[in-house]
Length: 236
Image 1 (tube, helix red, strand yellow):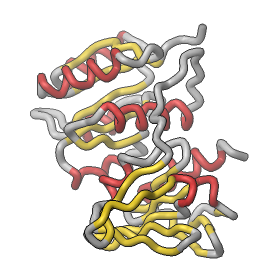
Image 2: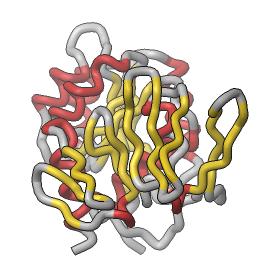
Image 3: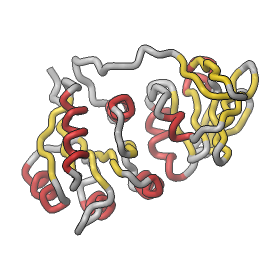
């Protein structure tokens, strides 16, 4: 059996540590090497242990998560965890594997781990638990409307509103793109820009700057470029 994905947790909040430990314990191919309360402990850990993936808090006393991430071997991948949404862009600029906003639900944690394993080709004999849902509901004109995942072409954020493009037309809902992103299966959907999520199966063509769906050009932003191209190139 292939090695497990060896994980390090770095967070100064005891509750956050416990939540991540609990989430990791539910997935057989993840192994916690150590849980650290600060960057100094984490430095000592990675100097003497093989680490594949770090769940790293950004806002910590002393050495911040961003500073820590800049100083370590780039072969060690990072999933940032934080309560502050405004750090997301800087996190992705450091080529983070993902960015989890606290409080971290198990469903969103699963999505991040699934995406990490797919992107960086970690193969195991265990299957990752997955949601059986093939749809979700959004509020449109005071009613909850069912949206099938397979019918979504792309999703566009317009401030506090979202446009969900489908073959039947555009659905507009008052919701944030981050909240919708948590409901979507990572195996099928990809965030390519602060304002765009696409259905991977609907892509007609792509380049380093854009993807094309239904003759519509959608931009790939600098912050999401490496992650986007790594995933799309995996289908070649």
